[in-house]
Length: 419
Length: 156
Ligand SMILES: Cc1cc2nc3c(=O)[nH]c(=O)nc-3n(C[C@H](O)[C@H](O)[C@H](O)COP(=O)(O)O)c2cc1C
Ligand code: SF4
Ligand code: FES
Image (tube, rainbow over all chains, first blue to last red):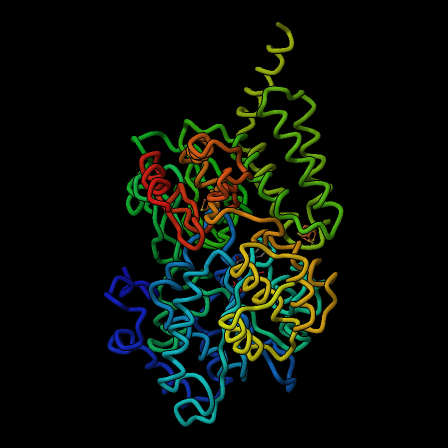
């Protein structure tokens, strides 16, 4: 299997610049500096790379949307990694920090950016220390700072730690947080590419996205695009968690059947139990039944199956799971993380949690399912930012695909009141 | 009265250089104050406000948005116990209850000797090594009752 991001991840001391350089690290910069910035943007477009943070937006296209001739511009690397189930960026940050720095330098060169921030979730204090050390090494080696490798390019790069707020992973909330405000989302448009950090054109990209730019530069966009499917190019780092024998982060070519991911790479279901449900891309996307486990793991196929690839976090549930209990857990999460700015989300997440909690405690009524659907309908596409839609996904999909789990609890409630 | 320590001041110097706008330093400064005192006092907010040209009320409004900032004293050790889906699928509820019983406190409380605060947290981004907790800055993964015993017993 061709890997682009993790082929050498277990090399001893890869996080140190010495070892990283021995592995060919920072070799892409000379190649890049021999080209014009626009050519790099075109290469990233040609590679078919799409954002790995959740939305899957084409990366080269995003870079080409930067407001023309407006400077300074900023780069914000999204290392907030807070989507439940997702723990892939941490692998790159921890084991290969220089790959991220190199990818960010390439992005900065392509987009004519001179200041870049890495926004890490507050809990990643230890990873920020690793990143800071790597940044120091990169400055010393002349890959950061003024006139990098004599190219005339200048770039300052800094880490910035958040302080515990899922919503700060949403790009505009991230920028507000970085500006020293409460991490509430901004109205879009204007998009960050036009008015981002400090009102200036800004690129926001996920850790994995920026890392992928390095092999695209080194091996060429064709080599990258040769892996994967027609519309989902390259490889994806997938976090597999839940009821599998070997949970972990696996880099796979896009389009690998989900079955192979669960049963081969992750070793199958614990105790050889039966698969019941799986969430393809983190808590914010619809959960799917076992019958769809042959779906290829790529953007289009998972969308056609009724869900989304999201952040690439595959959460696996075996037949002992009552799906309502998991939907309740996620409803609690969204209630806690709703920033409170808009009413449908602030109120809706509370109602969803309350009703699911009643059902789970066998105090539900038959009308509750319709009520849940009604609340979801009042939230879908009516919230200020995508967190509201995310909160709806586990509820609606669990009702659609696992209605029997709800009915079981509602029947128990009925039997309880009858006796 | 709140004053930043000498070593904090050195860090502040570096922090202020990172941003073109002073206000951007608010989270790092709050984090520094918390590292110094264990939690963030109103006096610290006043001082931070002065450093970034913002009112104490503004500092408080930002501070209150983020769950990692404590405005009341916490124990020498803070445990953040993940209760989100991947950890839940692997039995975190039982382990959290076990931990609370062992410490003889409820979730959200601090032991009587002010040593350990036990908090439940949302996903800590170590889901494929669930169940997971953070103890101050250190992650502990693949938790079991035995592991929790070992960890708690090793704290001084
Ligand atoms: C509620 C919410 C949380 C998000 N959290 C993250 C996150 O933790 N990490 C991330 O990279 N993107 C996250 N995103 C997506 C970002 O808004 C943005 O699309 C992404 O960082 C863009 O980078 P990409 O194009 O490289 O994917 C989140 C979005 C929403 C709505
Ligand atoms: S949808 Fe939720 S998280 Fe997004 S702005 Fe509204 S309240 Fe805040
Ligand atoms: S769900 Fe517990 S660390 Fe992610």
